[in-house]
Image 1 (cartoon, protein in one colour):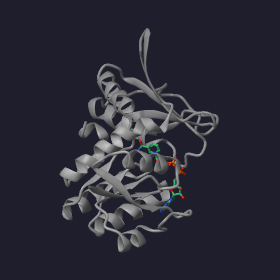
Image 2 (cartoon, rainbow, N blue to C red):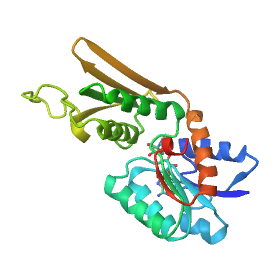
Image 3 (cartoon, protein in one colour):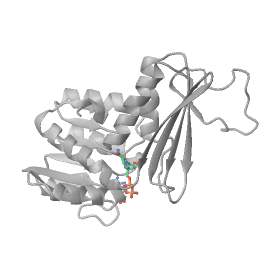
Length: 248
Ligand SMILES: NC(=O)c1ccc[n+]([C@@H]2O[C@H](COP(=O)([O-])OP(=O)(O)OC[C@H]3O[C@@H](n4cnc5c(N)ncnc54)[C@H](O)[C@@H]3O)[C@@H](O)[C@H]2O)c1
């Protein structure tokens, strides 16, 4: 039996993870951690009381780096769904996991459809030099752009160094009008709105054609097969993984 602590247990994702884990035969939730009315308020309180094999974190961008440092310094494998980690923090967590021979999976998106959308965008990126990403989320989301959008841009930038979004002489009469500029000049636009859950569209263009690759998450259940896959992977492999695509 794999003993799992869920951090962010009372949140939207945390509650869904608890349901999914407890419905399996080979794993169970042994600690529900949440600063807001959790069974345990901190990870330390939980591991002082129960035997934890791995922790699944769906908290918030402000907490995740400290939570992950704590786990990887205290012999706890960790699966990170929380978004908002910076590249440098991800590199530091990778080094720490490798040094301490612990499992650590960071997946900006656990839904298989979104992983495929990223893959398809990477394939298309070889053939188009103009691309922009629009991501749309519910208005409770704290970080922008989404981890999925940043990861998509990183994958696209791996295969094409020549993105030339927009006009080289363009200027913004209102700051931010052209979105955030990330890897290799790929622009990301973030929409936050009640009514949305999580959607992303990657738009490619060249003379006389556009290609749009779009994914919509309509229920948080879509993330659960990916989370369970990560649990079983970490149970067997104690290494560092960034992106669900690497374990599918
Ligand atoms: N990787 C993915 O596939 C995926 C999918 C959906 C959401 N997310 C990300 O997961 C995170 C959580 O999303 P949500 O919609 O469940 O948010 P939420 O606000 O509903 O839940 C977060 C919970 O974490 C708790 N929390 C915050 N800081 C904490 C800490 N330091 N220790 C313990 N508990 C803490 C809060 O009290 C809250 O109950 C966000 O970063 C979101 O972007 C990732």
